[in-house]
Amino acid sequence: MTICDWNWTKLTNRSIAMLVLASMAGMAQAADPALPHLEKRGAATQLMVDGKPFLVLGGELHNTAASSAEYMAAVWPVLNAKMHLNTVLAGIGWNWIEPIEGKYDFSLVDAALAKARSNNLRMVWLWFGSWKNGLSSFAPGWVKADQQRFPRVAIRGGKSLEVLSPLSETNREADARGFAAFLRHLREVDQRHTVIMVQVENEVGVIGDSRDRSAAANAAFAQPVPVALMDYLQKHKDDLLPEFRQVWQVAGFKTVGSWEEVFGQGAKADEVFMGWNYSRYIDRVAEAGKKEYPLPMYVNAWIVQPDDKGPGDYPSGGPQDHMHDIWRAGAPNLDLLSPDIYLPNFMDLAARYSRSGNALFVPESFAGTRGAANAFYAIGQQRAIGYSPFGFEAAPTGLGEPQSAPPPNPEKLPLSEAYDVLSQLSPMILEHQAKGTIAGVQLDRQHPDQQIRLGDYTLNVGLTRNVRTPNVVPDLAGYGLFMATGPGEYVLAGNNVQITFTPATAGPPIAGIALQEAGRFEKGQWVVTRLLGGDDSVLRYDFATVANLNQSGSGVRLSTGERGIQLVHLYRYR
Ligand code: DGJ
Figure 1 (tube, rainbow, N blue to C red):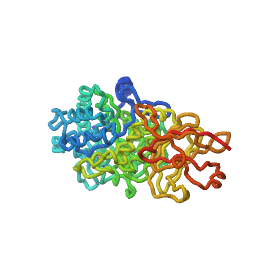
Figure 2 (figure 1 turned 90 degrees about the horizontal axis):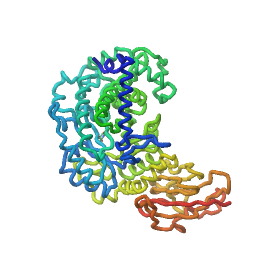
Figure 3 (figure 1 turned 180 degrees about the vertical axis):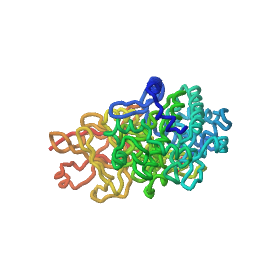
Figure 4 (figure 1 turned 30 degrees about the vertical axis):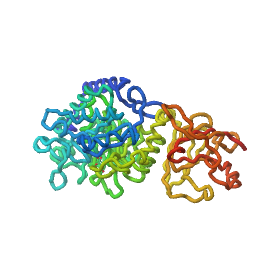
């Protein structure tokens, strides 16, 4: 039986009712305020940990780091104490915990949990089960070696890949059993909720062809599109993401037919077919895990790269942003669809993963100054639940050599300094995400200025200019996060940016600065470290020009270090 058959085509009213009841039971457990869960709070969806909203300031370890106590010995002590991470993302291979079928060994899990706790860190485990970067490299040997029992993806020409077929019920159930055992173990040993989320598989999809062409896959592809998928699409027709809706529209909005009749000939239909089958498979794995322990669960996407011509160049059927509707239809047990962003258009991609109620979590991206800017933008502007560069433990920009040691002076890395600021501000950020009174920017030479309406003022944010040459654009990377904390009051944080204010409500047209302080938040309390004014506040001296622009010439300049967080009170004059 293929997954398509298993899933939906035979659903009776009774089994639908049972599914609804089962998922309500899951929700009831997840609603237990003590367990980590996602919660819609005002304008944001937030991750709740121990009954309180939690902002993930994360870092993903190199793939196999958690299997080496020796390597991790130098890493654990710096992550929170020096780099200001509050959460570490670590891979756990299926082959590490179930090297012999049905015999589990959780010693690596327990060792990592103990170290995380003693180093003041939460954890997100990445389940490298059936797939890691599309491949089945972390499947146990007893799975890999028995191709008859655990069928592989076949590509055009008949060759099979070292990739488990998502069309196999045997593959799916073996993975689900291992994952359920892992979650059961976490429930038993983690009453302290050190583990706050789980990633199910890693960057799935077929690479090298647009779809699986194994016998089971071909048979399923010859069947009509499952009724459950068609029902979902019809029910959500007006809310579908435009790029997916267009695929269906171009093929005539058919509500019944083969994959190619409904979604068009060729690679598009193949991709939708794979998306449905991967999402149904992973939903079943997530469901089995949640039944044991309902932690929030997400999948991560290998996103489309600029040179990719079509599905198969990038992993076909993965949760890329244009496939979200299929994943939502196929995997209701997943809480988030997350992007791995290594492309320069971070803002655009982050926005695409913040649509249709998907809360943004970035499990992989850069560290460095670019990473700092990404974190500020994602958290401030897209109300992300968290950010996590890849390989941060071993290299200043992430993506370093997997075996290298932590860099010297880890506390001085740009992302460590940015996380220091974000961790001080976390309670306030979470409050303002929910209120919708927060914004974030990232700026560079190509995008040196941005205007943002926040509270009763427009914030004119730009890369920090020289006071004497205010029209010369510097070659800097700047970022900022801004919160409207009261009438005419703002808390501003960032680096390499300057801000002036323009009143956005009726009244005197010019904003001046009544009070400007630099400081730190200690246990949530604002501690002033310097009273700012004079050279700290003047942004330009061409007063006649700025007066004509209804500006005072003064503003806020943010830079890492003592000027990294500032509080201003504004007043207005004419
Ligand atoms: C993306 C993967 O998801 C990670 O596990 C890792 O392999 C990185 N790529 C390395 O670039």
